Length: 242
Image 1 (cartoon, rainbow, N blue to C red):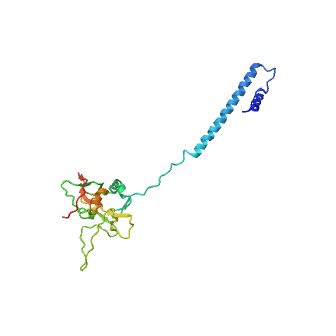
Image 2 (spheres, helix red, strand yellow):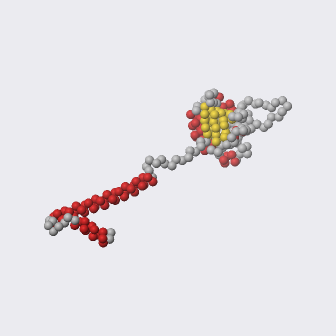
Image 3 (cartoon, rainbow, N blue to C red):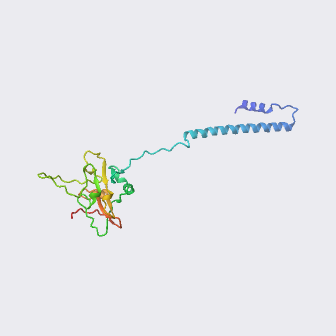
């Protein structure tokens, strides 16, 4: 505010004041004008504050949705087929990340299973027998790869005059030996009806350290175990026949 502004304010405050005006009226008029100026100044500040708040609201609206994370692809999918079997597809890059989620999904779909990593469970008195692929007796009846890599306990044998190629068992995590399929997918069929009464499937995934310590290349162990109390150890079973 400069000198001219001060003079203008003084002139405005003396408008209507004459020598005949009583002192009380002069004082009252001054107080009234002072209140008006204070009220006007307060209104201006409120307006500016409102603009600032409004600008902040526009910049950060309360109703604006938060940044949504991009949905991560699931490590597996489970679907029930018309014959009652379950078709399960693993993502090879991510299936190690959510064993508990897969176990819950299979159980919810009606297939009793226990999935662990680095831990291997058997029933009391069970020798934990598995074959060279890490598969226990009876598993191939309840879990099989698709696309021809079907797990079966029945030996097929070579045709007369031919030599059978070395068998390659379908295993979770190795692509199942399926030719022509997505190399990043592992697809298996689980058959709840083929499970012996009172039994469940146990899948034990080896940790990277456990796999590195084995020359056979086994990445997981599958066995049928009772639904009761199990004995668990961190030592993977040694494949043997019998």
